[in-house]
Length: 114
Image (tube, rainbow, N blue to C red; front, top):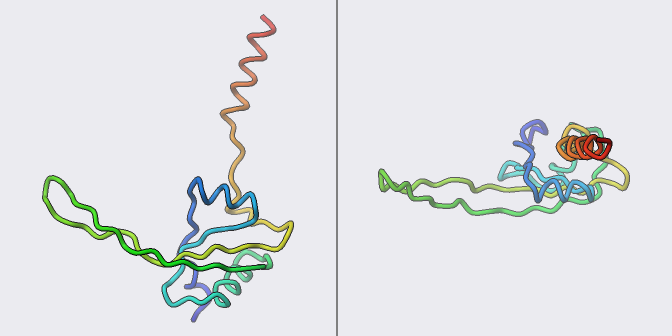
């Protein structure tokens, strides 16, 4: 399989960001992808070394739209949890620093000075 088509997209959620702090990145991958192909694709695209790959499939979910009374199928696919070697990270997917907390602290300091 062509390495550029293995990874569909990165999954960015609260749970995924918590895993990123431990060096585990979550990707949505094609259904035919195998562990070795996923590891090779991540290594080539992000210039990192992969320690471990875990794969899980998840079923599509049915949702009912109230107005039209139709059932719609959404989701479904295969995701890979990629663990990088110690000390490595993917800068492109790293969570941004929380600027909101810094602003609050600055405002508190200004209030204390007055």
